[in-house]
Length: 347
Image (cartoon, rainbow, N blue to C red; front, side):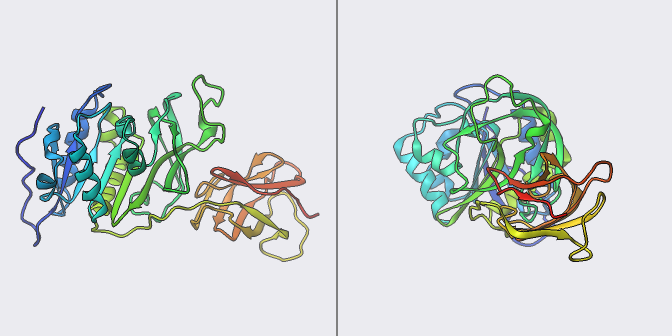
């Protein structure tokens, strides 16, 4: 299917909209949600106050230096080995490196396995989907514009991917699967570190890259929360809004003597107390307030039990001790992909 006509937008503000070429070519499994995705992105553009124009197409000949000159970003919901020539591949990488945007959804990582440069561009390759169900997703970077409306966490039904050739050293993770919401003994789980990233971004040369693993069902694309995420992601990859994309990794560490009463220093801790934990790398980089057992991907485990968090930052956490059981003895902080030293709770 080829969409020959671009979306016509109301002339409600000055300046030309940034143009996004949305490619949904299928060379492998074809998702039934492609039509819903096309409509969703067109609707996002129509609401963008002339900031965005989306051109859906399955014409791969548009991926060439000449045709890409008229676009500001390329977005994939594809699968399989796309029949691109070596010249098209070079043109596509140059397009992004020179300052344009690239985005992908769901099976965009189930694409072009035989072209390693594509894996470097998008950040990982699909490695199975152990779960298709309603899950909880933790927002790891609430400051990124694509994530602000989703923080601190949300629930959604989708087909949940895992990845190979993925490294936090190369991308900035935006949201991750809450593994407590799924069966970690399900068949087909290949990752052993419990780190299931579901959206990330990166810089690629002078360009910007965004990927989300969500998108299997029509309902995902029709969800206002996901449309908000995609709207801001498109504005970000087209350079119209700012957001950090540098990778972040963390080795959490609780300082010696770094746990105490948050309100009265030196006071003995008791059930229901608010405690402060000091150290380094206590989040992967974000600061967040709330009242949740996980904030910015960080958990505090008291004798293995997650306790409510009120505030997290790389150097300090405020948390509430449970009021319905005795104060435990061992504290550990976990972040996606890592865990801290264990500290005995002061008495």
